[in-house]
Length: 412
Image (cartoon, rainbow, N blue to C red; front, side):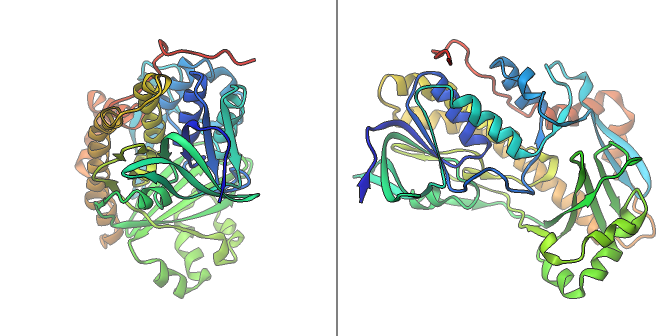
């Protein structure tokens, strides 16, 4: 097996939000970092496209926000939901004391390309596309690098620290032998597109109706749509046929129902198998998991991307100095888990509560008209409650900001 050059300070598996943000921050501090992405590009649809105020605050502190916001995006200033025809504003981001008090709807590949391009300016940064992490190098109980499969075949990348940011199906998490705790999910999601036409609203929308939950995300030229279904219902829905699926959608649309004809094949409808889980321990000597590799989140609140970014910022804040000194100890790795475990656990608890107490009952509802839960009506009517969902979704329970006292390599 071929071995790759000099030893890296850090090798990160996964070119998603967590991996690319951490790669940027470590390279910015002057460390030698390799990021592995198994695909040839970042163009995967139906990924999280909500860039929340917390993530844009990170970008602002790094001096990246102005350029970032030059990319095409749509601003979402409020969280709104429609319950049986009753429109409720459940959160208003405009009151947040941040650089960008709104959610930016942006295709995730634009976000990732932006981070990758900025990181490439640092001399220690190495992004390898079409290179898949296949396993771990170990010496006794210590992880010493990554086994890879790339355009030139199999190889090894020695590294002082290996980071798994390769998602909920993490190969490296499994190779590390870390145990996953499943918290359960009562829903799945069917994702698809509908065209966006002149005269359509700009508002990202969520609709709760008797037995149906439907979400539309404004992606500029088209709507990214999500139909929430009961866990395991995908096969039954597909067996009923595409015509029946279109008929289910028609009463949920805020415009003429002729657009459902655009869905003429099940290949256009992708299943998101919702998972909510986390590792019992996020690390072992020489190895750390972050983002979805450490904790798969429900799509409730759209906070997965932003929690992944906060994991990356916390990891950079806590591990940069040890890595610059030549060694990240077990205590250093444990400190990242300790820092991020409470907000992860609390957010997942809120997501599971929402799944079980709001979404699942709405899907099972048989009454002629679905009424908004009491909690939602109170939040919509009372200003001091209305700010809570905006903060929980927009900022999170423990927001992370980059430590600007760390060394900073000036990009050419």
